[in-house]
Length: 389
Image (tube, rainbow, N blue to C red; front, side, top):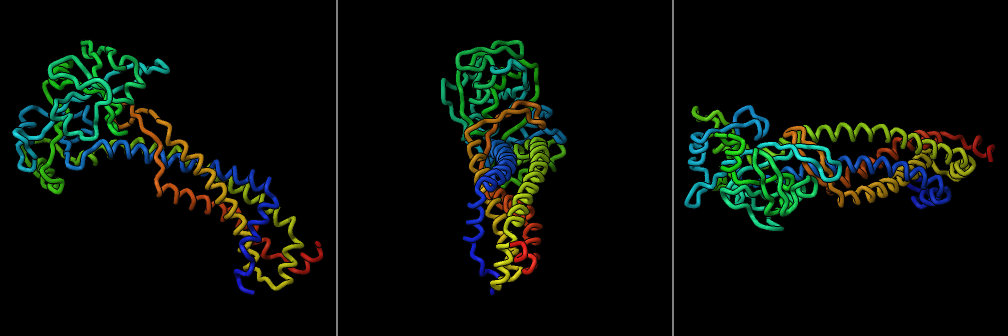
């Protein structure tokens, strides 16, 4: 007899015969795969939110050593020098946005607890450089006015940020005249105001960052070298996408460590459950195993048949877990970004890579849980098995 002479249908049929045990064990594995996939989806959603915040041909210039825009400071002379670099695109004037970023404390609508919100001061040029941002209600704030635009996520979460409402910060009352959709980017969690008015309100004479549009994205390295090599400029430059991706590192690391720790703990229980299930299957089918051996099936064929049962069981759990995890894409998650210390909203994102990783993980649990019972089944002697019958 060859190794594969025992058909796969034999293993599947035995799972159906013990369907109640199969369902309970599969649901345990489904829970583990659900947690595993949800962690990866949350991390993917975070990275997608922050990476999509950046444009491929935009560069963010900040002070050397600063981790966030809030910590950075660029004076007007330095901003003028950088905006005149030959790599910077221009349309009458250089496409450069001199931006000021501050954190304010507002209360959440649902809990009343206070949290930090990013307020970005910029002008029409800066708004135009963010192609993914669209005004969905109201209008853009007028230059020189105490008007603000609010991202849709911040408007839902914080008091005073609904269209037509007012909020006080920087010693002034600001009226919400527009809501904008940032395309599920980090801008959805921000407030936008006129840059000059915001700097006056917070008594700032410098900018937090300078965002420039390159003539060609391939000039990014040339522009970066020009900024860092100029002795007049204690500044650094990154592509906008890279800048925001770096902002996700601390929170991403925390999500992965916490989530994967829980996954490991749960997976141990799931593997033990699968082992118990398969051990029980072996114990109740000793005579059947002996019959198969008497018919000429090799030990390796018996081992493979029982291992196939365990893997099939884990795949059922994996598919159920993935199906449940996919439903999380309709939910939005909000937490503090450890890098910027501001509230950030992002969702769960299921990608093909996560689907593959989750199914491979479920198969690995099936192999781990079924290997020992399968080895035990393959080692049962024919005489011993037939005596048990």
